[in-house]
Amino acid sequence: MSAVYINSAACISVQDTLKDDFFKSLKPENSVQILKAIEPNYKEFIPPAASRRMSKTVKMSSVASQYALKEAGIENPDAIIVGTGMGCSQDSEKFLKNVIENNEEFLTPTYFIQSTHNTVAGQIALGLQCHAYNFTYVNTSSSLEFSFLDAKLQINDGEADHILVGSCDEQTDRTMALYKLNNTIKKEGNLPADFLNSQTEGVIWGEGTSFFVVGKEKTETSYAKLEDIQIINELNLEETQSFIQDFLAKNNLRNNEIDAAILGFSGDSESDIYYKKASELFQNSSLLFFKHLSGEFNTASGFSTFMACQILKNQEIPEVMMINYVNKPEIKNILLYNHLGGKDHSLVLLKKV
Image (tube, rainbow, N blue to C red; front, side, top):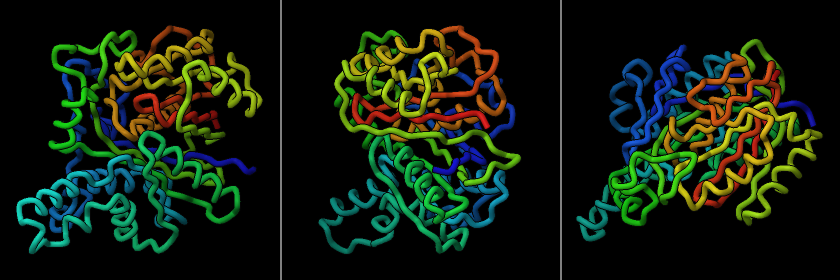
């Protein structure tokens, strides 16, 4: 299999990640139930008439994809692949509200058309006039990983040279209210959240979008080599360590050769036990966490992948992400481990270029 490189990375999140020096201004948040993304000035990127018709996630993704393509020096990718857990949920809610209020009669189709999960990939393609392969993966917390896997296979099979891969998820009032009711989101009484040693269930919910250009050639802008991806839907707690070790063995790596492991500690006591099991394997590695910076959401792994790319390129780990204080002289291999509520576990191995 030929190498696959991440040649650009752009992210809109609850941190100001579009700024060049955002590493210095990362602010953890543990005392609110819901975190909102810091949005750019859309007028600079999208004509106002078009912007008014776009939902938040479409606008965020349009801007992030523009940043990623510009950095990679690509005008038109050979494919566009997007992963999302909830899709354009704001327009979905508007459509369903219309259905109820109008007794299923005299409905305008606009909200329905714009509510489908593949709207983001479609709108990006329309903006670029890109008629190439266009696909959307919807698989909760492993949607981005499936997108990367598809892109990797296409590049290895010689079907594409440059692929735009992204992830996106937004919040909606109704869904957030339901998440509070079923304790997906932490109760206010259990805040501030202890992300690493939580005794309570629920998470702090976030949102955001991340886009990457992956290609078969290493370039001046390359961040990392996308070495391997592994995904499993269900995993017993006692199988966690063998799941990770088998993955490393497949890539001819020992535990101590992982320079940094980024784990998705979310503050949910019931599902964070997987990360505690995983962390036991990497006592000699830099252990990092990230959801105190991004919040938990279906495609939060986009934020961790973006951060891993920055760490590999800059050879610097933000102190705010550190669980332990193991510092390797060089960061060559980063392992990302994520899941959502104990389901859809994914491993991504990134290497320094």
